[in-house]
Image (cartoon, rainbow, N blue to C red; front, side, top):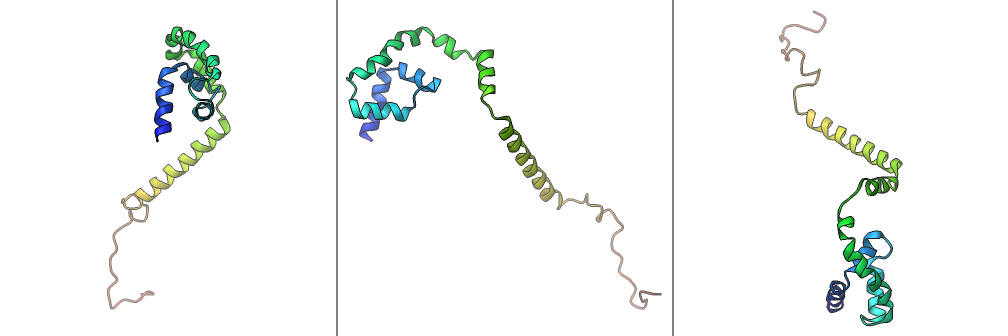
Length: 126
């Protein structure tokens, strides 16, 4: 846990690392491994310090989610998997509705006349 806390404090000193993770260029696991191997003072971090000034200037652009950003995200979505998930959800909802409707009196069998017992002295053919 001490290493993780040290890495968290290191990330707080390098806010430009967050932009790399958000863009998808790097992952936190990759940054942690680099920090664990090289340390906090290695030259490798100079590559990520160059964008620190630019990242500070572009925070307003990154915070506002534009229409083009939304379209870029939607392009990456696999529509077939979305359709499959929606159909699965619809089936589950239908199953739940069937289960919950069994206790109500909306069945056509229940709408018939109530049961009247047959007199004892009569037979089926009478």
